[in-house]
Length: 321
Image 1 (cartoon, rainbow, N blue to C red):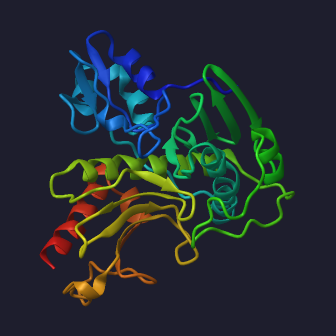
Image 2 (spheres, helix red, strand yellow):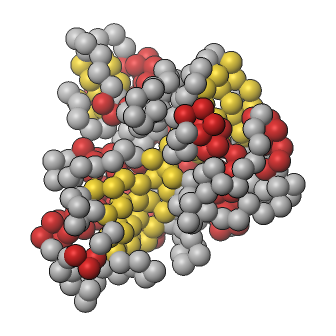
C-alpha cells in the first residue's frame, strides 16, 4: 500500500533536531516559480545545520560515518553511494513500456496544471515534482501512485488507458512528445511491468541524479540547468556550458543503439569547437559526444564517484576545446 511521501521531512526525521536535510527527490509544497518545481539540494532552514549530497554544511557520507544505523536508509535514496544491480531480463521491452507511460500519462498530468512536463527520479521509480494542491503522480515499483496533500491512492500498472483513467486524464500524443518519444502504441495492451526491472531502473536513475547534482553544483559547470528526467529521452539530464560549449549530460536507461544503460555527454554545437574526434573519449555513435557503458559503472566500488569523474573529464575537454 502506497503512503504519502515528503522526502525532505523523512530525511529531517532521520537527522533529528537542529538539522535540515537536503535530498535528491522532490518534496512538497508545490512551487510556482519559473520551474514549477522545488530544488531539494538548495533547501534552506534558518539556524539549522544542513546535511546534503552537495552544497551543505555536512555531507550525508560524513553523517553516516557517525551514525551507521542510517546507512541503509541513506543508500536507498542515493544520498551515499550504493551498488548497481545486474541487468534484468526484459529490460528493453519494459523500458519502452515505462517510457510510454511516462510520456503519455505521467508527464501530461503535471503539464495540464503547470504547462511543464519535466519529471524527476523518485525512490522506487520516477514521477512528477509536486504541483497544484501538493499533488504528485509517480511510478513506485509496479504501482501508479497519485498523492494529493495527505491523500494517496494507488493501482497496479496495467495499460495506458487504465493508467490515464485512474489519474483522470486523457492520453494526448502531443503534450509531452519529444523527438525521442516512443509511439503511443496500443493503449489497451498490458504494459507487462515487473518489479525487478523497475527496481533496476530506480537504482540507475538514482545514481544518475546523484552524479548530475554533484556536477551541477561545481563551479566549473557554467550555467547549469536543473536535473530533470525528460519524458522524451527518458533520462535524468542537465545542460552545462557557455553558448559554444553547451552540452547535455545525462544517464540514459538504454535505447535503440544500446540495450544497456549508459552515461553520456552530447555536444550541441561540435562545429564551433576544435574537438579531437580521434580521441577515444569522444566515442559516441549517433551523436557527437562521449558514452560510458553500464558495465564499467557496475564494476566500480563507488559508482557515483566514477560517474562524476566521467562527466568532469568531458567538461574539462570541452572547456579546453
